[in-house]
Length: 178
Image 1 (cartoon, helix red, strand yellow):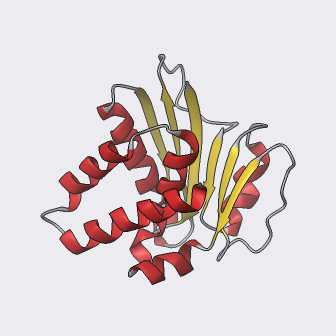
Image 2 (cartoon, rainbow, N blue to C red):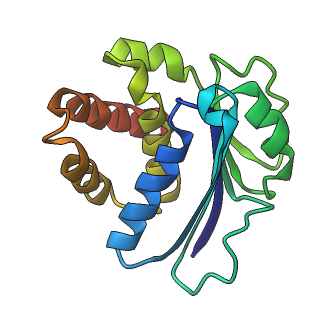
């Protein structure tokens, strides 16, 4: 098993956090992982991205040029990375900020309104967790329980209310992916 992934969006949408929590959870489960963020002025509203590789064998390079999974939280991300997704890959799209989704017949797409759903759950801050839920359900790359433990360790003392909303958002993403 080997997944090469790119998660991308505007700075502040949590694209890098998607990669961080998937990588941490995969490491906890004993998998080989690389996490390579790309940001700079992007943290102030431009497009930021992170490449993550999760494998049950050694990883030769952290560079992802043809991802098997891609999350586009905004249109510039979809335009930049979408064409490079491998055939039979998965593209997860934020319908609220990606009005132009050109679908390829050899790719699996999950197109959902992340911003709208995050507001319904109770916070814009959880839109990235919806994407993680979709990834978990579609790929089984990590276990929900492992991710929930990682999030709990990170947020239980800092922001218990946000932890609750994050777990709800992950469950929502898993439901949407079924």
